[in-house]
View 1 (tube, helix red, strand yellow):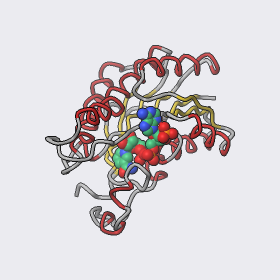
View 2: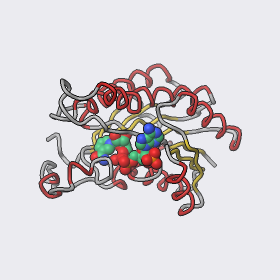
View 3: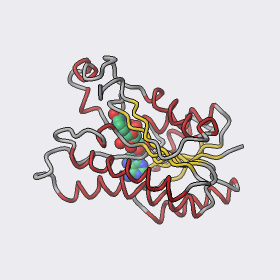
Length: 235
Ligand SMILES: NC(=O)c1ccc[n+]([C@@H]2O[C@H](COP(=O)([O-])OP(=O)(O)OC[C@H]3O[C@@H](n4cnc5c(N)ncnc54)[C@H](OP(=O)(O)O)[C@@H]3O)[C@@H](O)[C@H]2O)c1
């Protein structure tokens, strides 16, 4: 049985991804910042396992990856999903501490978890959850979008550095209906949906299907790609 580690797996895209792997008989570990969130999800889904671990902590990344290898003998796939956006606003105005947190969790974090997983013996692939914001600028999302643009570049850099043994890919979603994006759709969902050619928001399951495909053997000749999944937003 193969093992996958999904950072930030208590809700949204991360939880849908954890369940997608689990349905396919993977051994699935998730992380969360909060003991109570983790306990609730593990209580509901007894086949999942997890650790409290902040995505921007090198120590937590190393401890988590080492603990998983101790329990299961291997980590096959890492999904760098955890992300945050406390930094809405114009780059000239947003508190530097909020920008720093965004870049720590969204950009440095995936590198810390990639390093920890590789050092622990990661076998197959890494998948980074970026964003269309990393491709096309949007007002008010500058700090977040810069972190995702960096993550897109990092995906390609790591793909080159970790080949031929480990594949590294990414995805770039537009607006997916989750807690993180709530401020973009809660006032007028259809107006936000209309920004996408398909006139609907993405669902966590739309995204987890692509993550699952890119992360396992069916995509064994794909590396260094960041696949846009945006309902036609960029058209
Ligand atoms: N939703 C969208 O429209 C959209 C579009 C493009 C890209 N994305 C990206 O997709 C990824 C998942 O987002 P989502 O929309 O599914 O968000 P979400 O529903 O808010 O879920 C975020 C998950 O990340 C965890 N998390 C947040 N900060 C963390 C930290 N510092 N350390 C560890 N875990 C942390 C949360 O768990 P706890 O609260 O339990 O810690 C939660 O499980 C993110 O990287 C996001 O940037 C989302």
